[in-house]
Image (tube, rainbow, N blue to C red; front, side):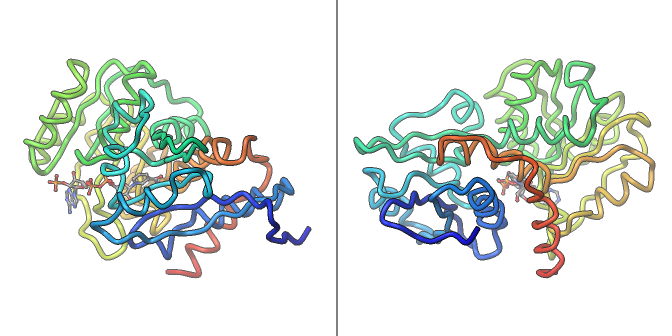
Length: 286
Ligand code: NAP
């Protein structure tokens, strides 16, 4: 069915900079079309130092809400009037909702997306079974650590190039989270049930991450939040070692499900193959 924009069309979108290559419009618009919802999902590229003005312009609900991506996740949290527990724990928001009374509500669905991606692609993985290593100590790593602890992970090891940042995350999240320098990753990978790359290394054009994945137990699940390319050098190494893997695209799609529900009031039809659409777009973009 061909969609038309009407006087009652609900508007949502994603705000980031850059945002042109975001896969979120493709995913949300495919779900909207499949469900026959009178809605549209667009991109916004606010000025880097005027995100507050951008949000002020949307107060009142003309736009139902926006997903927030780099570099605005932290500032989005700081200017919201209401903050969910999981956004507070992550110290970042990937979702802002604009209520009709002018209130701005911040949430974070990245952690839920991460856990749902493991459930979809690593069915035997048990969060509660042992320590999980996270590479990186930025917003994505902190959000992942908070969500994993909330879901019952007994221990999370934050491994980062800059130790002070890993220590800050561990300090904020409490005793089940420990910090480790990237130079000592070998020791921190012993006995883990999963390793999650939450650094930006591996992203097309960025440096690669040299981590001794061969020291992880054979059943350890290796996950990369980076999905451009879909199979990063990190995931390729894991696959070469025969480790089960989870990719960042699955996380992106799974974090979008609760966002869609918040914007449009119902869950997307998960039989719509947005993954195939996204992979085709990634390949066309490469
Ligand atoms: P961020 O705040 O900028 O943090 C980046 C982290 O990467 C820092 O810990 C940094 O270490 C580390 N890093 C960067 N280059 C490195 C290198 N060459 N070697 C070792 N460490 C390196 O970014 P973020 O918001 O946390 O996002 C991290 C990644 O996750 C991004 O690629 C983002 O696109 C991705 N992500 C994906 C999803 C998804 O749905 N798939 C969701 C959220 C985020 P230092 O502290 O030492 O600088």
